[in-house]
Length: 147
Image 1: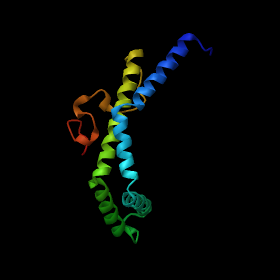
Image 2: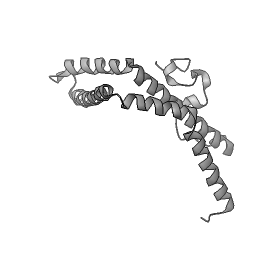
Image 3: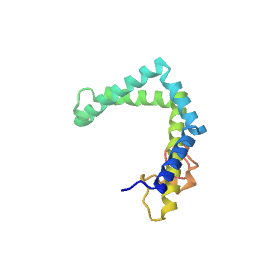
Image 4: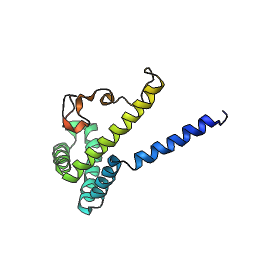
């Protein structure tokens, strides 16, 4: 494939789009939320502990109720997840992640549909074409997602 002026123009426009995304308010909010979570040593430890408990959970799931630690691990994983879910910094990060994903999905859909309505999108995210959700999965809105 030969590089043409048309290709160079597309690449330049792609660079401009990437710069616009990187300097957007949505990405600024994501970076701020990410920094807030991962600069908190106690929260980082809590996340690490939860990740280790998830590994134990997967091990227990292989054996089900017959695993000797089944009840303890099942209770612990629920409590740890709830504690993380209730943390304001973690909740803000999840919302910011959803907003970034939604923005990227919208951009992908816009580009794909400018080529043809029959172009398949890179994701199965129904929120791109169904705006009843209100913008993010965390809303628990009409899209039937769970909050």
